[in-house]
Length: 249
Image 1 (cartoon, rainbow, N blue to C red):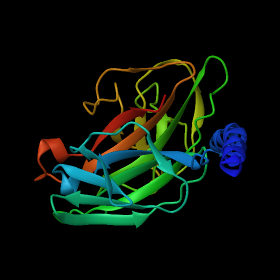
Image 2: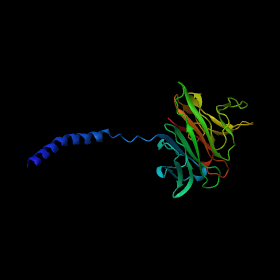
Image 3: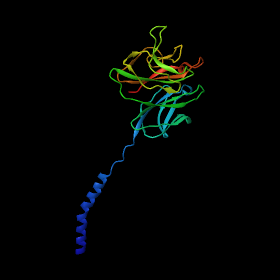
């Protein structure tokens, strides 16, 4: 009986310490580190595949887009995930994209040819550093099938015989210019041929695709002008070349 009594007292004495140690062990367990992430924006500019698409990143569905729609920025784990674009169950484009920690990217689904269903992916890095006070940033992405190439983003000539004021250097089909800085203002920019005669390819206008009006380029904002569509007299109006604006912030 005495042995049992002392054993019970010993266990009672050890129990609080054991419970305290267990509690401390749980509290001291480090939380799993959050994965490094970047951000990816997806835009549906594939005029020859102008049905609704479904986007997957590493086989996880991240959104559905109609032709002309652009997603918001999506959080994506850093690395080289595969971005896949489906039309229903059919894969129309698939590509590994490089995503770095805290960096931003735009991925454009576009048509490299006028063949029905033609689709490919263009990934460009987005420098979202704020521009200087009183200015905005803008760039040009050329995805107009059959349109002249290269082109430039420009301020139209003030007179019929004048020359446009170039904002970007040459941008070939399937490529993007760097961001350039413009003074904040209401502008009707133009996409023009890079070589003489310097003719207009499309007017940017208000950025909705109509080619009319002006766009107020606000101080501190960042924009992409996208030329999309298919050049040709028999092409439906909704798929004709047009310039639209994506605002990044």
